[in-house]
Image (cartoon, rainbow, N blue to C red):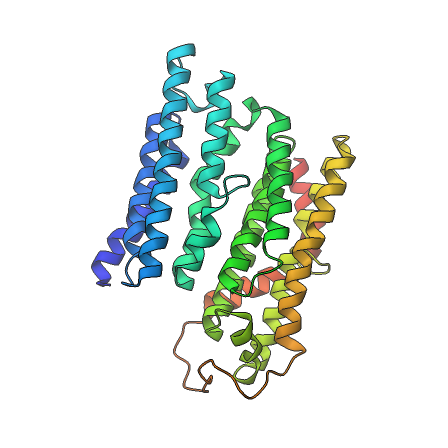
Length: 349
């Protein structure tokens, strides 16, 4: 793609997100979401491959449906209550419709079906944008409308997403689909705690973005798209293979890695809110996710793949990729757990 065109598209992507962040009026927020969607579509379809075009079409249809639902809900609220302010959403019909629309935009269960299919059709860099940057604008709206939404609906969507994210990834061999289900599970944890501690949701979102960026960048560096190609990547970069395994375990939420921090604090907060059943169910669904991360770690570090390999042999050529983002995100994905006391002190302010 032409660098000038790419610059314009990425600038529009940033503009759409910032516009949604800064808006207090539903129409302005809707415009930001639309700019965001329209900017990423050419980036998704830049490789003229049937899978990429199919993924782009599916993404466009789901995002357009969600945007129409948001417009319908905000218009209904303005009609019934006379308010266009985002934080003045008060009618039950409008709040429920907005919540379902934002769940569709983010890929939360039970409206998650598009996310694994779309992510599977994209290359890793575009998949990274879709899994991280594209979550910010809908989450900004969700945090603003969360106080008016029925807490049972939020807890149900959160638990269902963690369950679907854990269960869906069990039988996958494609790494992009595994990361899509991982995304659904992590977003479920964030929605689960959204009404009780919004600051914890922001902390979880920040760490999720760091860990997912690290995972996508390591896979891009290794040029791995399936478990089979991942199993051969240790030959060309043993250090990176070891770090990839640790990043995956961090995504699974194992101590002493950074991914343990949000899960620990969320379970603690759920217990304080007298929701022990929700906390137990969330912890048990985390075990499902942990299983497929451990499966990837096993394939990556403990197996030597047979010689009759159908994939292209990974040659040790001169490395030209910029590795600074990979280094920073990997360090953050592995080493932030000791900062937990400082984080909890900041959250308590």
